[in-house]
Image (cartoon, rainbow, N blue to C red; front, side, top):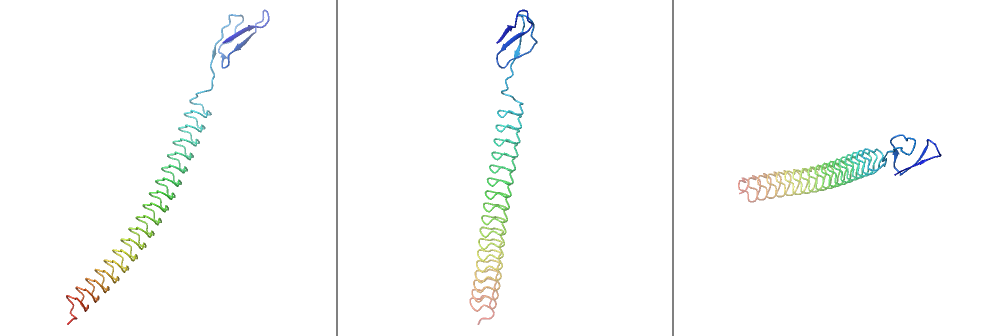
Length: 223
């Protein structure tokens, strides 16, 4: 609503009483037949407003619901500094897929200690972790459940120094198949004294042992 008031008799000036949020769009005319127009200037719901903090699509400084906001801390898709729900955030500590420093649920995180697939330093559930002590497949130093661990003492398949359940362990004393020095249950052990099939020096139950004194089939030394 626009109110017009003429100031003094014969005065060319007018006083306008306009509602808030209105401005003139044409210069005033003398007399009571002056025509005025106004337009709105409300600062709400700005799409490209670079300083608005709410519902800003291209606002680079808004902290909430910012799609391309590089500084927003919440719900930022390409925000490199956001600490929460950041997909490509390299510094976020939670739910970071390519975050190299996140400690939890990090797939390619080389320093995360938990549930790290390619983490070389994680101590738990590490597949290619060379230093993890538990459930390490290719861990050369893990002492438990190590398949290719050359130093593990238990359940080592290709462990050359393990003393128990070693298949190709040349120094293990028990259950060694190709162990040349094991004294018990050695199939190809040339020095084992018990249950040696091809042991030439074993004294007991030697099939091809030419020097064994007991139960030797091809033993040429017995009378």
